[in-house]
Amino acid sequence: MTKRRAVYPGSFDPITYGHIDIIKRAAFIFDEVIVAVAHNLDKRPLFSVKERVAMLKKATARMGNVKIDDFNSLVVHYVKKKGIHVIVRGLRMISDFEYEFQMALTNRKFDDSIETIFMMPNESYSYVSSKLIKEAAALGADLKEFVPHFVEKEVFKKIGRR
Ligand code: ADP
Image (cartoon, rainbow, N blue to C red; front, top):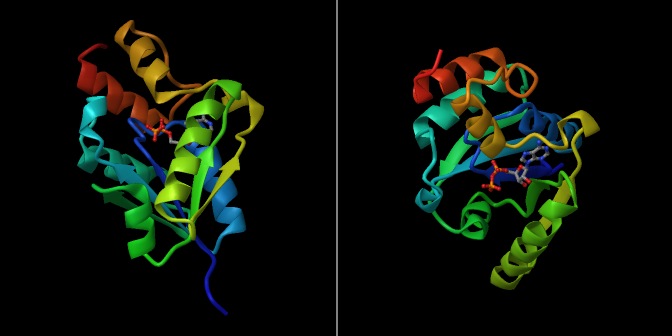
C-alpha cells in the first residue's frame, strides 16, 4: 500500500504548542508528516533555519512518523519534488482564513495536483502565534504556556533577556 504523506510548511520561528498540536493531529491521519521550515528571508526570522530545524527535531523526537526538513523554493515545487500531494496548514481563527485561502488557491494555480488541508488546534492554542511570543518575550513575559521549556530558553538566549 502506498504511504499517505503530507508536508506541513511554515516559518516555525520558533515552534509553539500550537504548531505541535497540528503536527500531532496530522501525524495521526498521515503515515508520514514532513514539517518543512521555509527560508523566507523577507520575514527577518529571529532563528536561523538550522536553529528552527533543531528545535523542531527536539520537539518531535518521540513522534516516529514525523520528519523535519527545510526548503528554499516555492512550497508546491518542494512538495512535488518529494512526490507528495498534500499540504497541511493550521487555522487558528477567522483572521488566518483570508491569507490561508489566498495562498491555498494560489498554490492550486501553480499545481492543481496538490491539495491543501486545514486543521484546527485545540482551542487553548488558537490564539498562540510565534510573532506574539517574540514580542512578549522582548518584554520579559513568561512563555511556559505557549512553548516548550527548551524553546523558551532559546528565545531568551536570543533576545538577551533574563
Ligand atoms: P507561516 O509564516 O508560513 O505562516 P507559521 O510558522 O507562522 O508560518 O505557521 C505555519 C502554519 O501553522 C500556518 O498554517 C499557521 O496558520 C499555523 N499555525 C501557527 N500557529 C498556530 C497555532 N497556534 N495553532 C494552529 N496553527 C497554527
